[in-house]
Image 1 (cartoon, rainbow, N blue to C red):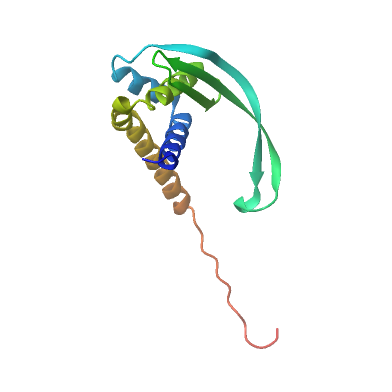
Image 2 (image 1 turned 180 degrees about the vertical axis):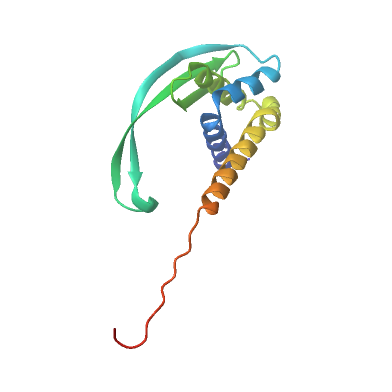
Length: 152
């Protein structure tokens, strides 16, 4: 497999892990059972990042404000390094995301992590998005204009 699909898969995984509720990720991690030991390279740190926005996703960028982010880095005893960045101040969430990122680089763990953690979290996120879309659709109002003929 070339590096492009591996990079795309890793990006998808990191996105899913970062957006997942921290408590849900922790529970799936715990159910996974024994995992290889790792060394914390960068203990979870809390900081701020500047968030940029765009009107309609295509307009000129503007500074929307700051957001709290927690990051962590770990290395497995076999040498793979993993990184975790999550919004908020959940240090355990960032460390677990980093550990999963490191483990995902080992062929014998990739399928197991996909099935036990990433796919369930992605499915739950999709269900949340569908629920939000359904609630928004329920409030939709269609406006129409009646044209008058002739002058007023």
